Length: 359
Image (cartoon, rainbow, N blue to C red):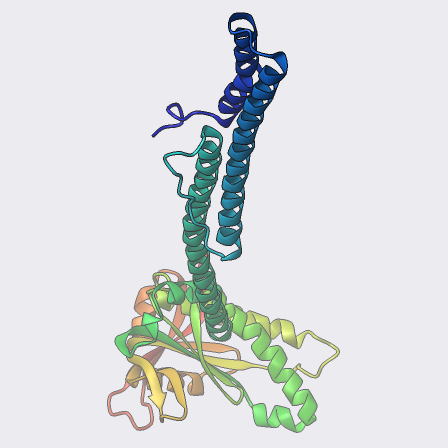
């Protein structure tokens, strides 16, 4: 039964009380006029009938009130129980009761929809929080990796290594240009300095050298006392690694000259020798399970180290393969064949005199 098919309590009450006020009096008038019944007797009948009708009205109001209390009780139990349930209507319910129950049930449906929506939103929020937590962990890890890598390579190289998923740290055979630089007569220089001054000298020296290597796309391999080793590769560092290594070496010599001009420190005798060689190397993690170094090994590395050892003060010696890449940009002086210790075949070396303007 729909709302339109139901009788309203308001209409029923008016009908009942209309009968209570009119019907008895009409009966009384009829009895007096047509049947000549005593007026007192008639009034008693009219009042009795009126009383009966009013009693029926009171019973109807009482039943309506009880039904409303029942609805209120159902609503209270539904809310206090923590689980909102719909109210069931009866076929004989007045329209007011039916509409009240329908409105409440509509509210219940809306609440259910909101609960479902809230659960979905909460699940999404929990997912977002989990994603943010994972992102924060990855960011902290990447920040730590960047901080560690930035001590050895330039920022551009760090970005490339992160993008490649650190693939560049796998053991790999490739062509690379190796650079060694060493302070000449460091033992003699150290005799004139206190331990604290020696530390300051090395910090000032490496503080100038390392940024130059990074600026030219080089990777800092290691420090060995006052010696440093760097390597330059074509990928992901850019092309023409030998030329970049030579340009870095030239700037390193210029930086040493600037350090020597510092009148407040005893750097006047500071000088370096640099050796550079290009060829096949194996780059990877070398060492024990407790300590490893990411470094390059091979004959190319050994030859570069020997070039550095025979280089004079403020001098750069490069190998033949390095020279072939850079010959259009450099003026060199060939050293002739060089016999290196513990190596059977001699090698050709070239002392860098100056760079051409095209560099």
